Length: 302
Ligand SMILES: [Zn+2]
Image (cartoon, rainbow, N blue to C red):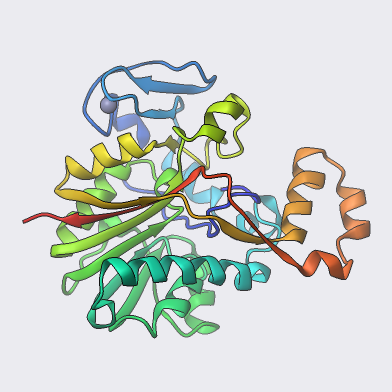
């Protein structure tokens, strides 16, 4: 995820024990990959799923999500964005409350909880909230500073004590080498009738199609997979879920992060950024909606 991902939270839980190299057919439908008109990507000839055309080792992936990732390399300073991130989470929680009227009695598990901001925001709205992330620094911060129940580790290796009512993956699935295995794990982790809630970029959106190879969400290797509403629906429905909600909500970001993205990361004008970043006007936050981040909720059948 880069500094301008409107999805909000960087949630790294990607270094799984099964590497990309183990999967040569489409992880959504099992079809064969062919060329994609976007360079560096490949596309399933059967279902249209788009993914990065690369081989990456688990060690490389793990190294991507060190402390540097959340402080400057891709995120200006993730922790300083707590307020705007929480405003985004609050809107997602309100949607979940509409879909799941008795949410207050439900048990929630967040895959890719990073610094624990969502767990902190949601804990008063559910009966129990727990999360997991491979990011060692992030989960330590979550436990020690936010006092939330954040586990450090790989969700695929996690042995839950009990099943939950809701699994969330905020801006996480695009980072995972094998999102199919994570969705299968979630299907076994939630109770029948329980839900999975996912946000990720929508490569089928108008903005993504207009921007083509320049769409800001396309940046392997941190973003490995590029779902559309149709391919994410296919992934979920083949693994026991039925989609009950699709929307493209806007997200607040503080102006300083937007400035950092444009000046330092896109234009390479880090000196200018450093000179003006302290101006108080950049404390303001702005809600943008390019309608290219999708929010999908699916219910487990059976
Ligand atoms: Zn496919």
